[in-house]
Each structure stands twice: as structure tokens, then as C-alpha cells.
Length: 138
Ligand code: 5GP
Image (tube, rainbow, N blue to C red):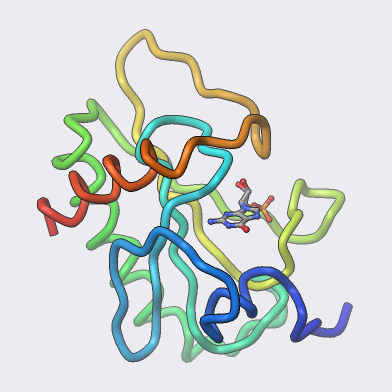
């Protein structure tokens, strides 16, 4: 698959559509997932264009995973979570639905089940409130 510059995350990166941002640096951005599998579900993206992990330039990963760690710590602390899972899907058959490389950071609490992937749209107010908690912990 070739990279489609009209994918939704490319549009967010260009500022053409909004997102609830929690973090940005020269190489990466992090914002709230609009269909969170748990409260505080955050996505971390490299700004460099690639469809997924498989076609990415390996030089992307140092900055990307430094940001994933930063966000994972802030999500765990800010959301008062017991743990955090990191997921990342490659190709439609593996569950990928947006074709710009991204890493999911999802808080977990003992006894709380994960919601379905790409399930229910969250309200902007809830996304903003959770983003504020994560930003406060950064
Ligand atoms: P994938 O299946 O590609 O790993 O996950 C894509 C994720 O992006 C899904 O969890 C979905 O909820 C989220 N998503 C889809 N469209 C948008 C959008 O326009 N904005 C945001 N913030 N997240 C989105």
C-alpha cells in the first residue's frame, strides 16, 4: 500500500482537522483517540509519513518510542491507572483502520474490561477533561 496524504491523521498533522492534543515535539504528536477503548486512550504518531511500522524508516523509532514512553508514564499517572498497554496494528487484516503509523497508549485498571477497538465515539468534553489530566502529568 502506498501512503495516502489524505488519510485522517495526515489531515490532523497538517492542522486541517482538529484533535485533542496532549503533546507535540519536532518529530511526534500525541492526541486523544476519538473512540477510546478506555478513558485516557491516547495515540502517538511520528510526523514522518509511513503507512505503518512495516514501511517506516527505522530512524523514526527512537523519537517515536521516546514519546510513547513519555505519554505512557503521563497516562498512567494522570489517569490514575494500574497499568498501560501499548498496541500498534499493521495492515487492515491486523485491525489497522487509519493508514499513518501510530501507537495506542491505553490505560488499564484492575477489573475494568477494555472497550471495543474503534467502537463508540467519545464526547469532546470528556476527551478534553482526560487530556487535561494527562497534560498535568507530563
Ligand atoms: P488503528 O485501527 O488504525 O490502529 O486505529 C485507528 C484509531 O484512530 C482508532 O482507535 C480510532 O478510534 C481512531 N480514530 C479514527 N479516526 C479518528 C479521528 O478523526 N481522530 C482521532 N483523534 N482518532 C481517530
